[in-house]
Image (tube, rainbow, N blue to C red; front, side):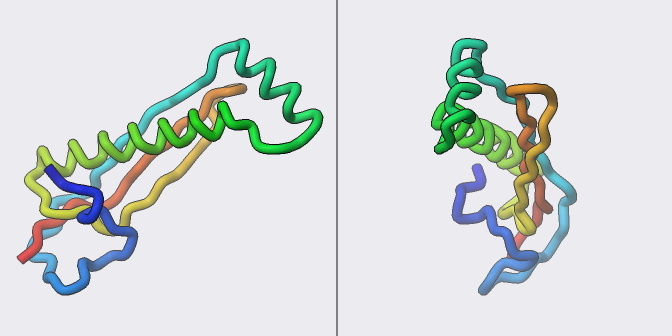
Amino acid sequence: MITRKELITINEYPGRNITEVLGYVKGSTVQTKNVGKDILAGLKSLIGGEIQSYTEMMNDARKIATERLLREADEMGADAVVGFRLQTSAVMGGAAEIIAYGTAVKLD
């Protein structure tokens, strides 16, 4: 399986040659917090500061999306993923989609 060190944001792999581009890979998830935490987050927004429950939710979502991307790349036989990116979008109140994407490649 591809490891984190083989997941890079630049479009080439330093010290190695890309021998084959396998294609686009992605992983995504939609995450939400429960109603009780949404109410507490709403109250926190009135006084300011970090809303830790949402920070945790987004960290979990990034991890899940990245793991799904890596699984897809692994299934393609990739040695690495280059051009790795994360994107977030609001789906509904209190819910966000995270998509991780990049290009699966074979290295020499």
